[in-house]
Image (cartoon, rainbow, N blue to C red; front, top):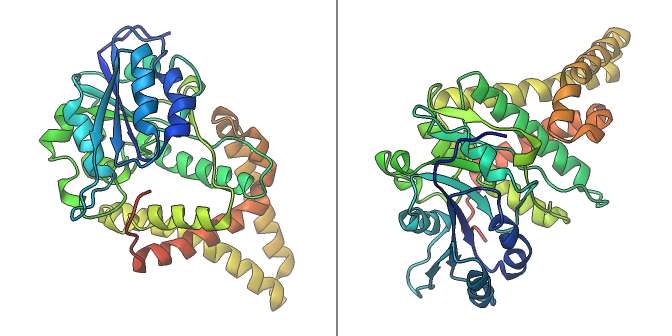
Length: 333
């Protein structure tokens, strides 16, 4: 177990999350870490979040509560809430998650904090969805897995382009030195991926994918809920650096066109045996390459879904890429 123990401030922005705070916050407050606080921003909640937080604070004095009350004329989003939480944090090293997330173990903070060093100011973690029997669940987990493989491998290659706010760490000095979310405060999402996209370098970014550090949450259970979530997330990609937009667009388009050309070959009977052979070869190669990664990220059950979900995944990427380009969302919760 790592012994590096810089003081940590865990920051959670919560709006109408009384049930999730009751279920998940005590576990975060019982982490095996010698020096940390938890800052929860109660962001304009209309449920009983305030009472829940006050009750928990009586048992765990290292919980700090920041309360935002809604103004009739000025609407605030998650970035404003997080900025207040960062200002309230007493420590230099910050670790972020959401109220609906629960770490896989009591060693979450220990392992994430251990990745910090004098040169490392950003630590990217992984946050999978819980496995359930819902029909949408396998594909949502598959999409999250593919996204994780993409951004984590890019970071390992010195080209970090995003992170996930459900499991992300960075330093307060980096946040204020780069003016935080100021350049994209007007954009609903992006408190995680846009911040990383703008500020990550090959030298200042590390990843942590030990299973103890995963933060699990519930996936959406309806198409409508999932659609709204992905529309909000995909709308941010157009603000990435140009090199990252080109990289991600090439992956999405090439994967989609591969299957389009395969279908056309079958429809028009153009070398169908060669077409089938190439697709089978690609899928076998993917299984061989991805098998260990799927297991490492605790999604080994999805490896045999790859042939089916791969074509859906690339269709989804292009569809939501277009939707995200033209549609603007107006609320984060």
